[in-house]
Image (cartoon, rainbow, N blue to C red; front, side, top):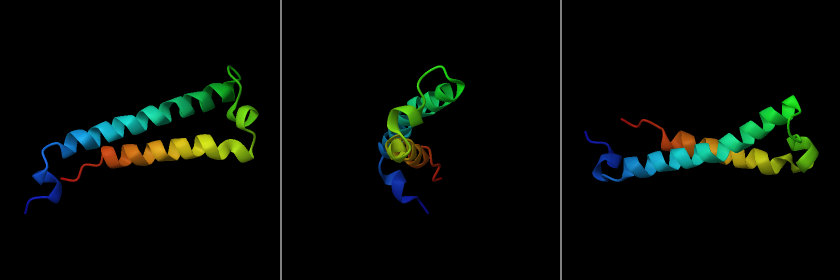
Length: 75
């Protein structure tokens, strides 16, 4: 039985683009956290304070969810 998504030829391209867009959201946050942990740049806690960490965390989680949907192999 054919998968529902196989009816649409562009759905794979759209999903892959969504996955790459999600990764583009995640990479800066992860790099900033890593470099901030090493002391090379101001850390996320210094910039956003502890209650404000929701902002970069929500960006990272959104990007990870987009990447998970975009790179999900549904075959």
